[in-house]
Length: 229
Image (tube, rainbow, N blue to C red):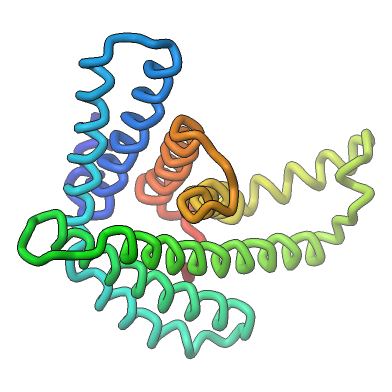
């Protein structure tokens, strides 16, 4: 309970809690639809998903400027791979959030907005940002394995030493594992929306819940957060 209260006191925490409920609602209504369960309950869950989506858009309002400004600090990072991937990710994320803000304005009815056009743009920029994040994760994994002298053969070995070496790497670099899981799950969502992969709403819902749970872990335990990110 204390952890939930702590998360609720942070804007990022409220966003991730709402995100779990949003994608959880999607997974649940799809499951009920497949089982041909109560139609009224399915419609309520669809409405709940939409409500949480709108709530999160409101929470993020104006954040595009913050994310773009944060790119100014990442361009000075000494490691060139981290510098390039992090900076490009932040710029792409800023553009995604800008498109997301425009979609929110359309939902409020203040102005007429082409939702299909801006939704596609938002998913493209989000996907680009996540690709950059995954490139960073792959680089970090390669760097750690090289530092620990872990080879490809160790992954397929049944030897005790190989297992110890791999478990030690995983234990000492949980931040990389959490970040990789989060980004790998997240990237499938815009890819599905853009038609690059064929996923059911239920699968998208489960991926969203898993990535949101991984993001929540980094808020509960800051040591699990990969920095800079």
